Length: 286
View 1 (cartoon, rainbow, N blue to C red):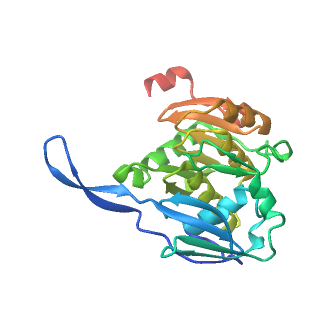
View 2 (spheres, rainbow, N blue to C red; view 1 turned 180 degrees about the horizontal axis):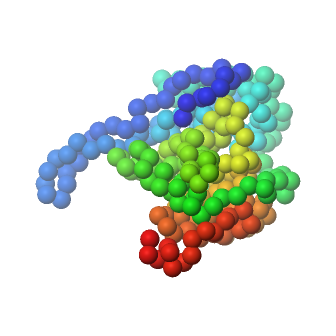
């Protein structure tokens, strides 16, 4: 999750301890020191204007802030952001832009509360620019590449394995038939994790047009919109999807796979980018 290239945006490095230990009594009457996920409020201020308060694990707070502003379309490029300073003593993230965001107050008045664990919000018209998004059609995800991704995610060391209570999102690429995880972020809300990935992509100058986005969470309209805004053609989840998530996936043409675990998946949309390789009889014996 490192920032791999120099960015013009000045940022703090204020990640938090991700778990704490508390005492818990098990079914045998034993007292156990048990790790639990952290959860902290973080209020984002843009040019001293309060925008939102997020509840976050604190793994990648600066990337979360930048990705949130990106996915809410409050800023159009990383170059618009001069500085992001996270201060946990005041539970705040101060964002300084190079030019004030035009009509910020008016844009914040029109918001849609999404299914993002009670705190998901999309500013402006939810479907703005969706039909203008063009995803690459000359990229392919093979079945063996998908299985390689699922195996890489399974083997990845995560907070979820030790403490639970978090969602994870991964940005991956394919090297032949082998998937490589470029970034993996966990947070108490799946929308935070996807925003942090979006922020890391901006900070690293990374193009999403040939990447795969994986999430442990369900594929709602918000998740599909954000993946499409990042120009990512492949969206994979171990969970299911919602009706509006499916409708937006069809409109954007994104290749969306749900219930993807081990050797099982459901391919819902964008089937032209997916290359099936293994016969059903081979899968049954695998």
